[in-house]
View 1 (cartoon, rainbow, N blue to C red):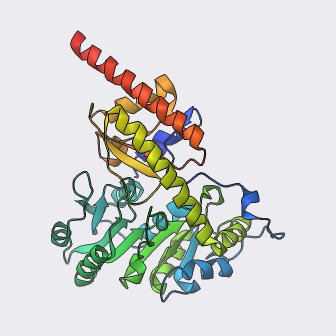
View 2: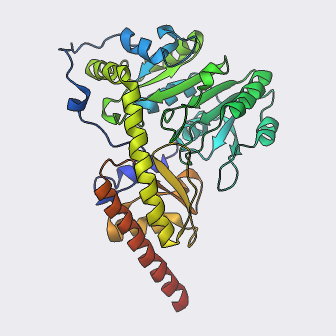
View 3: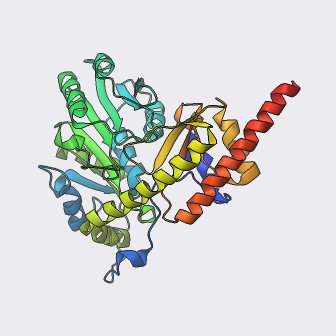
Length: 370
């Protein structure tokens, strides 16, 4: 049985009631009109592996990859599901990068895999090559990455990815890499895909986070053909095929990929400076600047009970952020910064700081009373 998915349940019970929703993990969603119209699309199932044109555009993002190396899914969540359950069986040993947003960890626990965590180190969330190499053995069936990382925003760089590839190759292990934030690096080049560095990789992604198109529910798995065929066999038991109108719109989005990436980077670089000013002035958070993604993971200097703190923010001020407990990281919170409305974000962050100050005063008063 799968355990409750803390992060998804935390948000789904609150986001429609929040006055200031700072829990989102993607860039501000676009409207269909901003993609441009689509020609009349039939309402048939379509090819269950995905529309050929869309699979070709996805494949073009990777070296030595064609449409037969791609399976289109209903969002990145389904991509992660079919990639995981088609590869891992009960009793298999796996190594998982942490912190993690915990979907795949939940799947692995449900399957009955033997999980070994490798944690990114310190407040800078550094990759420790020596520790990683010790964890990967001949018993390792697969290594799971989230790169760029959710929730830390860290990017494992190319030379470090090559270390991962070397260890995986020596163990004859898969690397399954969630790359949904690839393209939302705040500066510089797009992070290399694991698929281009290691021959036994499966990578997943979607149009939800960087492109601001979560409502299309378009994701994908890319990898070796035999592995894609196995993932496709699992997908036959889940959603059959993605919606044809969504796939048509996804083609339009990928045809203008660079514009979507530029939009996302502009939004987050503007908002990062605003967040830094607001949160540093409060003195309540230990700040680190992430390298990628539209959110920040900050350590609270005033409590390790971040679940209780986040519940207070929501109940008292309608401010919704994500508690570190959902990432197995109590004492941290993840704050979404993907809004395209700077005025709204400034107000939302102001309310976050105000209710944080109130929480600290009330908590201190309760401790004195005891």
